[in-house]
Length: 290
View 1 (cartoon, rainbow, N blue to C red):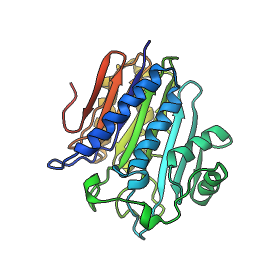
View 2 (view 1 turned 120 degrees about the vertical axis):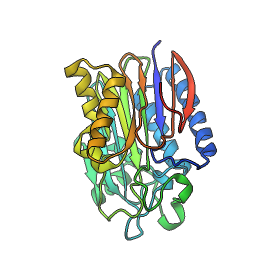
View 3 (view 1 turned 45 degrees about the horizontal axis):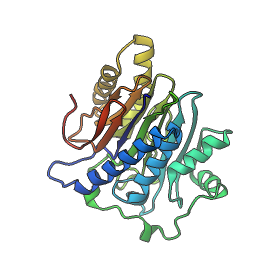
View 4 (view 1 turned 90 degrees about the vertical axis):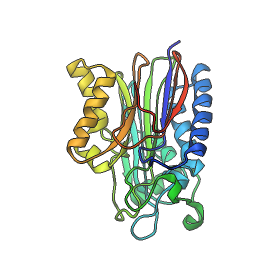
């Protein structure tokens, strides 16, 4: 019974900052997610559940913990993708909705479009019955301990999963960079840049979004594996080298169809957790990968 699950809470971890609370949260989620996969739940459902929990915690710069933009408001992004049939859904610059990943899932399930933005995304989310944010200034809890500041560009959460049915899924959600220009959209809601899943690999990225957009990072992992017969870990490290060429840093999490896991980063650290049928749960921030 092969399965795997990886979560990330952003590649903006700063040396000297205490992430005990975030690590405890990731540990709880990875163990619960493991149980869900063992019980036969789908990768798509587990990814959606895990990211919604990360959003709701207020411990990361996504969902409740989102950072304000240059005019003081909150525009959030998210995307999700199901590997077997490449169904995908995304929302960009959405306001007033508690769970952007659920809004993205609603777009996926509706099936008419892949991405909705701004007011259209909000209308669709409301039509789907998703919970609304009635008082944004009171609800959102971004603060410096999340790893966000005026110089930080890494405030994303994500999940990738392989279920016991052999299906892969990936999702990503963010509140964006601190003090970003209103209307700015990073890589998170862009299928192929911030999120990708097919029958080869599932990928979720975190870092300087503009660099990840320029390199189509998430899709490039799959392309290197499929066209170049490159192993998962080599492919993920190669694409991060490409991101660095464009003055970007960050990291990504990935699982291939055989249940192999990769969690590389080229920033100071990345909050992450992983488990599989071959590996007990691990939670790391600054520890390098083998």
